[in-house]
Length: 75
Image 1 (spheres, helix red, strand yellow):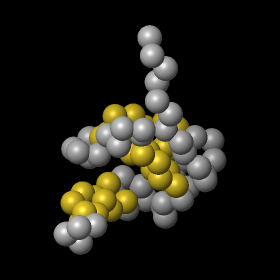
Image 2 (cartoon, rainbow, N blue to C red):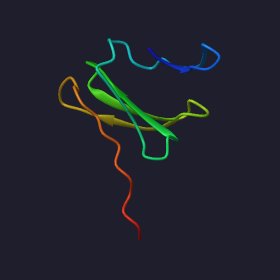
Image 3 (spheres, rainbow, N blue to C red):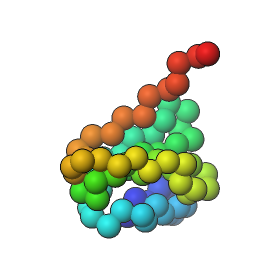
Image 4 (spheres, rainbow, N blue to C red):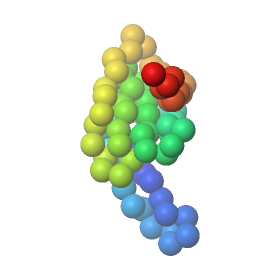
């Protein structure tokens, strides 16, 4: 489970609980709107921070030890 905390108020504001195994890596997008989390579940979960809505679930062939969200290049 991934918990997002308000450090000023010391309260948990949101939980992302789709992973069954211990979380190995987290990565926020450059604008802080998306969160990628991964574990030994063999997928990378990408969710919207404000709503906890899954935007994308990317399969992996093995346990993921690092996930990085990069900004999209301008079109």
